[in-house]
Figure (cartoon, rainbow, N blue to C red):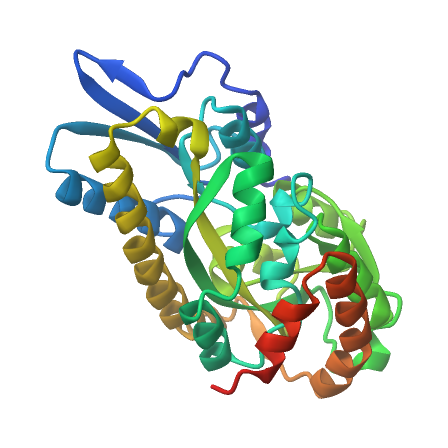
Length: 330
C-alpha cells in the first residue's frame, strides 16, 4: 500500500491564478492548506476568512484550496513571496529558511520549556525582529502566530531512551537547525518531503519522523510507525502569512481588517491545537492504533542540544532573543 499518492499532481505550480482577483468589483483572495476540513490549520484559516468579512463589512470572496491541491507549505510560501497563486496560508517557519536564516528559530527544538512558557513568549511578541526580517526579505507578512501542538517522534519500534535513539534515521524539517539538533543527540536526521514520510517509513528508508498529534492523525503515520516516543522536543508555532504584494494592492480598511483578523484567528488556532493534542493521542491509543512510549532522557537530550542552539542563535544574530526566552518565567 502506497499512501499519499494523491499529492503527486498537487505539486505543479498553479500558474494561472492571479492575486488578488477583482471580479465585478469584488476582491477574491486565495488561501491554501495542506489538510482537510478537520485539521486545526484549515479551521484557523476558515476562522480568518470569517473575521475578515466581519471587520471589513464589504463584499469579499475567499477561495481556500485544501488537501494540498496547491502543493505543500514550502510552495505556498514561495508563491506568496512571488505574489502569485496564494495570498494567505499557515506555514511552518522551517520553510522560510531560504529567505531568512532566523525564521526556523521561531519554533526550533527545545526552545520552550512547556506550553505556558510558549504562550508567554508569544504574548510578549519576542519574535518581532524575525517577522520584520521575513517581511523585508521575502515580502511575506506574518500576521499572527498559531500552533501549539507538542511534537514527538514516531517510530516503527519502541524507543525509550537516548541509547535506543543512536543512529536511527528520522525525518526532520528542511531548516539546518533541525538536522544539527537531531545530530547532536546521536540520530541520523534525513530531510524528505512531508508527503513522502509514510512511504519512506513503509519502505525502511527511515525509521521514523517527528510531528504533533494533528499531523500524525491526518497523515495516518500511526499505520507505519505506531510507537510514539514522548520526547516533547518542540512546541509548534505556525504563522498565518499573507503576501505583502497582495496586501499592498488592497484598500487600507481591508488591510487593517486582515491584520486584525490574523491575530484573532491565530489565537483561535493556538487554543484549538493545544487543546486537541492530548485528546487526539488518547483517541488513537484507545483505538489501538498508536502507543505512547515514555521517554526517560528528555533532560539529557536538552543538555546536548543547548550548545547547538546557542551557537545557532549567535550565527543568526538572535542571541538576544534566545536570552530573553530563556530568562522568561511562566
